[in-house]
Structure formats: C-alpha cells, structure tokens
Length: 189
Ligand SMILES: [Cu+2]
Ligand SMILES: [Zn+2]
Image 1 (cartoon, rainbow, N blue to C red):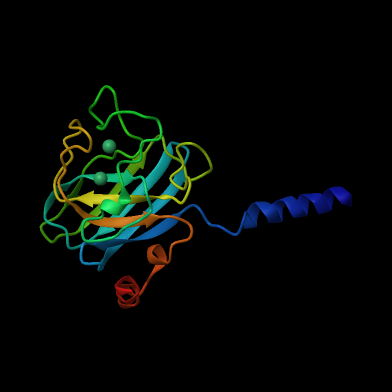
Image 2: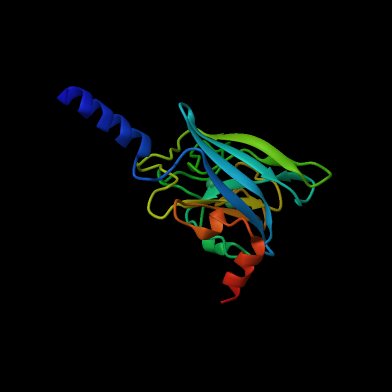
C-alpha cells in the first residue's frame, strides 16, 4: 500500500513540476513600435530546443535571428536584450571554426507578404536547468534582425538593426500579453 501511495505521489509531482510549464514555451514577438507581430514557440526535443517562428510585417528577404542573453525587449532598438547567448565562450557564427554561440541560428526568410514561418533548431540549448539553459537566471530572448547573418563576422554576423524581439522567460507579463493596448499603457509609465 505504501508503495502505491509513493507511486501516486511521484506521478503527481512529475506532472505538476513546480507549477511551471517549460515546454512548449510560447512567447509573443514584438516589433520596434511595440506591436505584437507573431509568436515564438520553444520545444525541448532530444536533439536540442526547437524554435518555431511565426511572424508578419517583416521586410521581404532573409533575416538574422539569434537567442540573446537577457529577457528584456525594450524598443525601439532592443539593446536591452544584450549580446548573443554565449554560455560556452565561443565566437559568433555557424560557419566560424571557433563558433558558434549557443544562441546562433540559421537565417529565416520573409515572403513578399512579410510573413515568415520557420522551424529552427538550437542543438546545444535546453529549457531544463543547466549551463546552456535558455531559462538560466531570468531567461533570454529571441531577436530578429533587419538583414541576414553572414555566419562569420564578429560579434553578431553583421545582420543589422534589431527589428523584433520576444522574451523567453517563465515570469514575464509581456511575453504572455495578449492585448497589445494594455502593454503599451504599461510601457508608458
Ligand atoms: Cu541577434
Ligand atoms: Zn552569435
């Protein structure tokens, strides 16, 4: 009887965790004006973290996209997101022999309509606890740039301005905000 109880308790604890749902983790994507333009969905998989991006209103063509080190998307320049997520002290670029940053990703393409729909992979990252966790400390962010990442230039692939940003964190109102008007009011304070 005791064993059954322990079994039930363990199962319950496993299901509820710490009350946090880490995977899939959905974050709202904002443009420089603070309008919501899409969604980023992160999913823990055996081969790393899958990054699903759905966005609209982008300039047609290729765009650099990276994980940046802070979960802070303050427009219009998104400098608040910091540098690339680089917990293993490598150089930038998927084509760099001394790379890459854990947060480096292949470019995404926006159609002529401005829509982008991409599924990417972060092979070295995790959403669980650990050195390469995207939820380490307060979390991280996903940033989309105005131009393509050349996969080589330091420190960030020469990909231009930061045009969109999503906070990856377990406790951000902004990441979960469904009403952009509400959000703008808060930002004005
Ligand atoms: Cu970036
Ligand atoms: Zn990088």
